[in-house]
Length: 144
Image 1: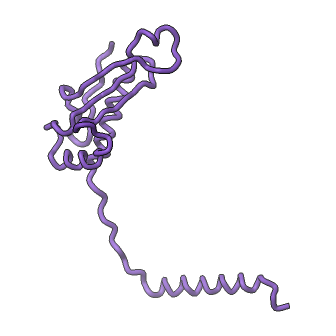
Image 2: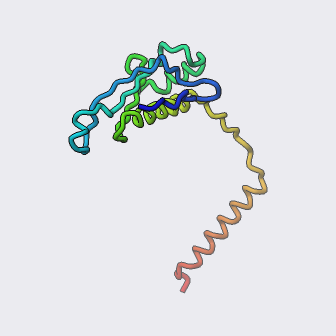
Image 3: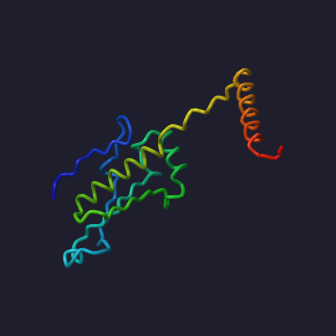
């Protein structure tokens, strides 16, 4: 088995701590011949989000709040079974977990500022609407 291409960067200088990742392997479902019955190629990667010190406190709070529906006892888990080799599934699971945490720890978007529409633009819009209505009204041949 090859060396894993870590570290998996979440954002900036923060990456997934290799020591805190819990791996579990099991047999994948689906087709694959005799080999699939003997190899544990499905990967489940678990990360204890509640207990980790690898993330800044602000990020951790954000992630715990946003991933609340996915957490089981403060632990987030990711499964991968699309590849036939365990190593590639490990890669996929780790990348997926890093992406999930990156999204969950992202800062909230800036609030949208409400801007006043200039009076001239609004009047022009209403004038054009009126014209369009008149054009359509002129199409119904009820004045004959």
